[in-house]
Length: 547
Image 1 (cartoon, rainbow, N blue to C red):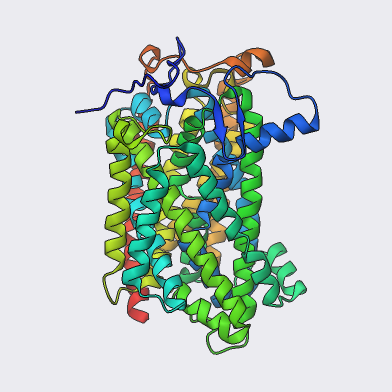
Image 2 (cartoon, rainbow, N blue to C red; image 1 turned 180 degrees about the vertical axis):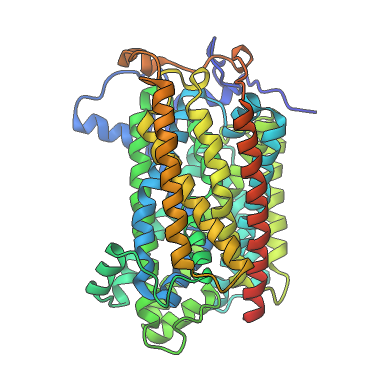
């Protein structure tokens, strides 16, 4: 039986609001400060703005650093070990992708008060939410498995048995969240965020060559050539840096933290800070691995993150190897918490259950129970002996990159729905940027598909041709959009009205109608991504055979 979403201990949901759970209404009680529900005053001084930002900071920083999880650490280390610093440019290009995608979910969360999965279900129906959330559940579970792979490898570096370390990590993850206290959970996550900053001294200890780092950041190139294996790794970098679970997590976490349109500017700042931290951390990991293995027999022969830690200890120093292992462990814990929580949030959205960290275990048994079950099952899977841990980790990150276009398309549709966002809908330029992002992701996945089917293809030429076709399609689509939409919407809304505008109750919204062209396009995208995911598995099996 679904649990009713009422609670006497929290304020009632505001009249005329779409907020479904009363636990999502009230004071903002962040790890670093509190903002009262009645506080709507302007912050005119720098001190006042800083205090407000400290109270808001959390969802953006945690979602970004959580994305530098065990899979991220392994993927960035693989890029550095196998390709040197030549792939650093991919991280620079991902900064706007991160900010654009996550800023859209910030607006959706603050303005609607309804989770991402629930919005997809209400606006597009159960049929499409089953695809979107079905992908999420499968991908997230596999991602949680990679987090415990990280725990196992990090513990192995220090000589700790996985049969001790993995269960202890699972118990810790359940204990942190089961307290029923949002502030306590957020403080614990920020402690792990601080721990992740060890990547910076780790990169310094590797004694990187400034010239090589500068070239890697500024010049798009791929050491040893643009092959299908390199494309797989680039997609994995995209998938681990901008993963579908981030959309679901940050929107729901913004709602759970009780952030409203009044505080959107501060949550945007939180998101930008998080994007900078995650890219700096990713670059530091890539640089450390690149310069630790340069000129050694292990260069170009990545196995898994545990072997990277041992290699860094051998070629740089024991302190550097220990730092890498600690970073891997910290990344695994924060990633497992965020990814599992994203899944439990989405589960609560779809089935209409209580899903808030402000509630005690007794008030939201299914929410906390689903979180605990996923953690414990994933931990058990990782204890299976002789699994190809490195290949599994890379394949899961690449799968996230392959499925990201589908998630981004639904995000774009919601952010252009005036019934949902009113005066907060996307500007035309933002739609063009987001469409370009989707196009690039599709080009990369198509290259992976074609090169898996025919390994003799010239991947560099194929990339140039497909990118040209994609740009022409975007230009044509932009021109058609401009002709059809004119000035793209209603007249500007005064700022004071924007700050208080919230989405009406979902039952009052008219369901959007899809044209035949849009329906066919969505089916084509869905079918293609299914084929791409299948061939990704084939590629991963091929790589496992090579190992």
